[in-house]
Image 1 (cartoon, rainbow, N blue to C red):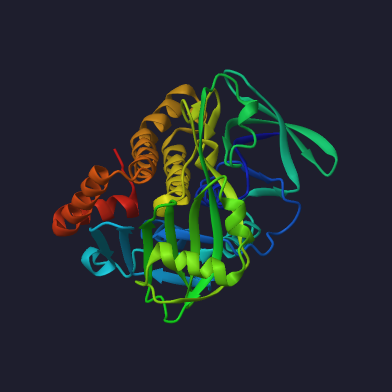
Image 2 (image 1 turned 135 degrees about the vertical axis):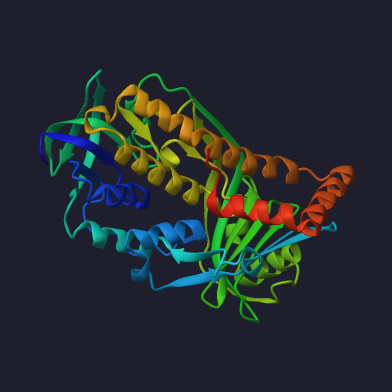
Length: 386
């Protein structure tokens, strides 16, 4: 890798790749490093992309390469044991779909293939091991194939999910565990999914069913102490318990694939930038998967940062005024998205009768107010911009 870059991006996942591709034809010297030693492997995890994210990926030239994608035409929100539900539809928004469900690995491979066509110094098997920031540049130490190289950059962007945050001084970190785990699996019902995504607030925690193929990708939130028990259930017990918690609106569940679980927490930094450093995606904030907003928020981070870099004179890239502007640009969207998902968990994690009645009234009000519903749906699809 050359000794000096305008922009060094750390993390070759979808967000870092999208940022690099947005800058590829700018004339800037851009480098992208990824710790993974080779091309992305198979990763069947389901990823819910909003229509806004799909549109941006199409502009980057990667959307057509993603073959396994299932449209989300309707979102159905309800709560267990109480009245009230909301339906959001693509027809009301006059869009082909509210979004799509894709395989994480397929998205990653599509971006990787475009990156390898040139225009970006793209290095796999390379990781950031040290970072020093000075007034006029950042000094990054990169380890590749057992050797170390120092590279200076006007701007370093951390897009590695937070793995390098500890290398950046003067950032306050806020972290709170939800004491929950997300149990994930593929499930099938006795009828096709019809392009409907479900968000069901059950007594144990939120249940998300994302349409994938003819079945669903399940994300079932469980108290952390109960998750191991859920994973240990045989298929029949798992399907019966899921049916009891979810109801029959998606039909009768008839099959479930292998299960896994991961812990859930809220993490946010005091700001998304430091001297000569910008942070995007999970490096800046990690949120609960309820409402499926994490990746879409991170992609907006990446694309907004790219737009700002392109609008900044080359000699001012990475300088304090540019990074302060990045912080202002992203503050509203990030705070609203993180705050909204956290509020949902706080509101639906408790079950007194008065709170259930309030939640029912809120869902009914949203369902009966078309203007409010469209504004809410638009916010979920495109985020908030200042």
